[in-house]
Length: 342
Image (tube, rainbow, N blue to C red; front, side, top):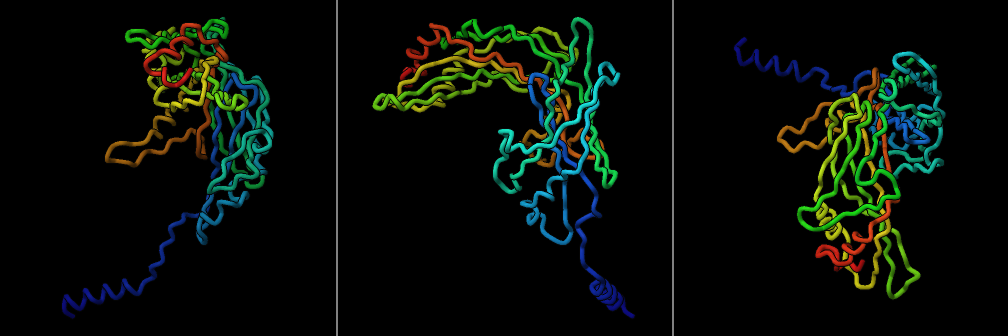
């Protein structure tokens, strides 16, 4: 047999073989967990779902089927450790988030019911004073029917102490618009916090001049910084930053549309700090959109035998801080905002 004949024989032999490709691996039970414990919150929630893939049908056909997303038979518990010793066990309760005021947006996946696991027990924050107290929460998820189990651990984040621009809600806030004038931001870092976001939420009213009965209260968020890393996870380091105040008025001018029929009035500000635990910070960094040529990003999860993120955050808020008389005057006369009719 010639070499050409032999080659044709090999090609024909391969072409006659089965060419079906099974792209779905054997089924494996997989749980997806999303949970951020916030010691400042009165109630905390966990989202615990299951991943799925059917080798015979399109995954799209199951997106509206609740049984494909949730498993209501799971057993959930949290072990609470203080400095390594178990001091409590918490049993979150299954609730419908839609009935808790946490409606799930409509979209590709089923949004009713919106199953969540509710924690009403106080979440204890890690702290350094007067004595070091580190609280670790271990989440265990078990399916009693199959014996499947997965879990994760996180230290809780500690409280931030606000030093400026508002250490309480009675001292007026004053943001100036001239060059070389600054908003002084100061705080004492919380324990077990990796990074902070900070915003000043400016509240104002809008009233129709032609129809005074028509009035709205609106808010605008000025993000002063994001993902600003702490000195260490020990906490209690004092930080101070100077941020140009005219940025606030420039963004306000770009955000609010002039309208001669609307009279506006500055009301107050909320000053908020968002402290992220180490795993949450890493999860955010890994999922930042890529701007390079290589678009593939590594997957990050801190759930053992599962997927998702279980970490902690601490939201420190000073609410309804009054606006100074000087700031109210600046809103009316500043070159940035004088056309907004404050």
